[in-house]
Image 1 (cartoon, rainbow, N blue to C red):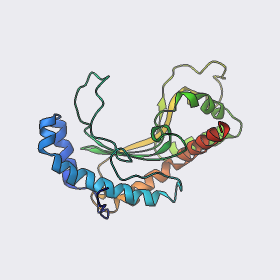
Image 2: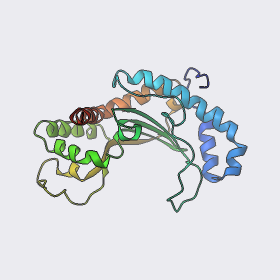
Image 3: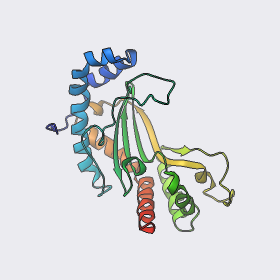
Image 4: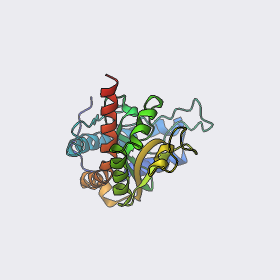
Amino acid sequence: MKEINEFKGFHRETIKFYEGLRENNDKHWFENHRQDYENHVLDPARAFVAAMGARLLELSPEINAIPKVDGSIFRIYRDVRFSADKSPFKTHLGIWFWEGPRKKMECTGYYFQIEPQVVWFGGGMYQIPDDMLGFYRENVVDTKFGKNLERAVREVTGKGYIIGGKHYKKVPRGYDSSHPNAELLLHKGLWAGVEVKIPDDLFSERLIEYCFARFRDTAPLNNWLADLLEREHQANG
């Protein structure tokens, strides 16, 4: 693995790279700017993952923070096999810190994204695996765990975060549509997020604390999901 430097912030050139990629989303442009990608995107991203992962241990002692592509750093290449949009590259940087006994993208965690004009922070599960949906729904309406979830959602939304992951139009058969958590039964994923204009902190070491504060805001929901994953794992042996 390439040596990881101390995190000093992302670069102004990080934004410039993605602005250029939006205007020229093709392999020729990317190859001509590959060194910019290495120097201004991947190098600070690796340093960010290492520093942010260490900071997140306060919230989630079992957090996974792997400072490499296909670890915590998402690949820049798009999967275009089943998409009408054949643009080869993603025009944003996505970074994922996860926890739980399942595969990386079947776990809960914290997500950070940089685009040319905005950054996005999130916490939770983007998509609940099909084989876990039943267990999730049972806990949504459970007397104890359902109330804990209701409390977590209220706490997170009270700080200005949106709750995402709603997918279904009707409450699943066998569940009470008048239940206080009925809306959450419509979810295929469960996450909290917020989008903000690029802060000056993005370009300094202060980003770690700036990002940590927003991850901490979403922690009640992430913690509920981490507990759900652990109990589901134990139930299945």
